[in-house]
Amino acid sequence: MSFDVLKFLRDYRIPYVTEGNKHCRTNWIQVHCPFCAGSQNYHLGLNLSDDRASCWRCRGKSIFQVIKALARCGQEDVKQIYSQYSGRSAVQDRIIKPKIRSESRLPVGTEPLKYIHDDYLIARKFDPERLERTYGLQGTGRHAYVKVDDSVVDYRYRIIAPIRFENKLVSFQGRDVTGTSGLRYKACPQELEVIDHKNILYGYDLVTGDTALVQEGITDNWRFGPGSLATFGTGFKAEQIRVLVRRFKRLFVMFDPEPTAQQVADELAWALGVAGREAILVELDSPGIDPGELEQSEADAMMREMGLKGWNI
Image (cartoon, rainbow, N blue to C red):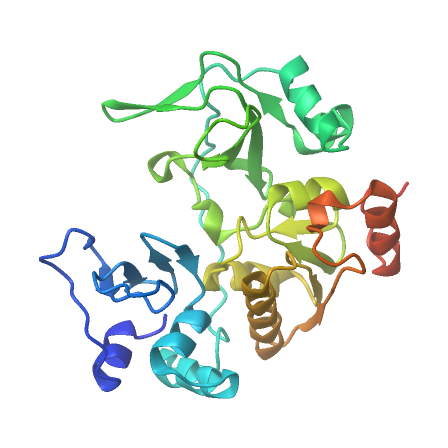
C-alpha cells in the first residue's frame, strides 16, 4: 500500500487536477509545486501507485519533502501524516521481491571502453580498467541507439553502466563524456527495462554481507567500490527501501553535501530505522565536496572505517 495522495490532498484542501492540464498524465495527480517560486500551473506530479513525486521544473522529490511543503508542518508531523495516509508505520509493509522475467539489452553500438571514455574517467581520477572489470562498464561512439516502438533514442559518446540485479541485466544508465549533452545521465527507456532501475539499487550484486553504504549516483559507487549502493539520484522510492530491508541489517547513508540532498539522506535513514534497520548518516570531512570527487585514498579509508570492502584488497 502506498501513500494515499488523493485523500491527503482532499483533507488538507490542496488544489489538484487529474485532467485538462498539459502536465497531466495517466495515474498522476498534479498540484502547484511548492518548491518552485510562484508556480501556479500544476507542475508537481504525485503518482497514485507508489511514492513518486516529480516536478516538470525542479524534477524529483521525496514524498516526505512533498508532505512537509504542502502541509506546512515539521519533520515529526511529516512522519505522523505519512503513517496516517499510508495505513502503516512508514515503509513497514510487505516485502515484495521484484519479478525478473528476462534480461535487458544495451544500446546498439556499445563496445569496450575507448580512449574517449578512458580520458574522461582518468580526468576524474578513476581507474578505467578496474571499473571496466568490476562494474562491466562499456562505451559508445558516434553511432549508438535503442529503438522504442517507432522512435530511436540516442546514446552517442557515453559510458554505459549495466545495471544488474540478482545476476540479471535489468537496465542500464549512460553517462555523457563530451560535456555537451543536455542530459549528463540517460537511463534505459522504461519500456525496455526488465525492472525499473529506480526500484532497485546500483551495485547490489557486488555487495557481500549484511552491511552496505547507500549513496546517490553511480559515480559515487565507482569511487567507493564494492560495498556501496546508489539510489540513482537524490530521491528514493519505497521499493528501494524494501530491497534494502530484505537483505541488509546495517546501512550507512552518504549523500552529496547540498541541503536538499542532506534532507533526503535524513529521510532515508529515518525510513530505514522505522523498518527495523540500523541506519547511520555519514558526513564528509571535506565540506562542499561530493563523494565521487574525493581522493581515492580518502574514500578507501572511509570504507575501512565502516568495515566495508570497497577497493581495499
